[in-house]
Amino acid sequence: MSLSESHKIKCTECGNGFEINEWNSINVEDLPELREKTISGEIFKFTCPKCKKEQIIIYDCLYFDRANKFMVQLLPEYPNKEYLFSAEEAKVITTFGNNIYRLATDYASFLEKVRVLSLGLNDKAVEICKSLAYSTYTINNNEIPENAFFVKCDEKVMAFQMMLKDKKPKFMSIPMEFYNKVKLNLVNSPLSKESFSIRKIDLKWALTEDVSKFLKELQK
Ligand SMILES: [Zn+2]
Image 1 (cartoon, rainbow, N blue to C red):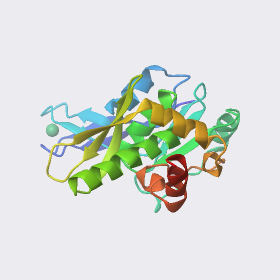
Image 2: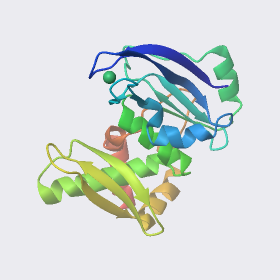
Image 3: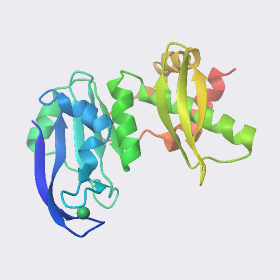
């Protein structure tokens, strides 16, 4: 079950009004072509038919992938606006089994989360590796990045992008060996607990006291 709705928007460039199609609910099982379109951000990009200016419109979007057992909710207005699953959505979601429910409140984090989970990665381990890349960058450069994002991984390394104020992003990599160690150790950690409520698992989470303790234990 996937839901889309049309809305009329006004072009930020020429003021022309035009219709856009917003995907408020995406079940990739029904529409596999929407996986790439979500990861690339294409579902949020619209071109004005009059002046051809592309605009990014961010809207509420619930993305679920039964095969990979995860669901990511984009709620730009959270916590002012919360999302309640429709009875039909709740019914579908509870059939997933042991799932991962994630919340994203901004566009870039939403795309990143869908990508990480679609790749079959453990997103908590990814965020922990990200926090290490972030802390290492901060110490070595005496500069605090504004944010950090997962870029890609191969057999050897996992790469992250450090977002810097008024500067080009810098890349940092973490050995895959370390990611695998984190993933393995998470299994028996209370940090791996999941529940049927959406949670924000991001850099901020990875920098909390509990996660720092876990990381310290690991590096002993
Ligand atoms: Zn226009």
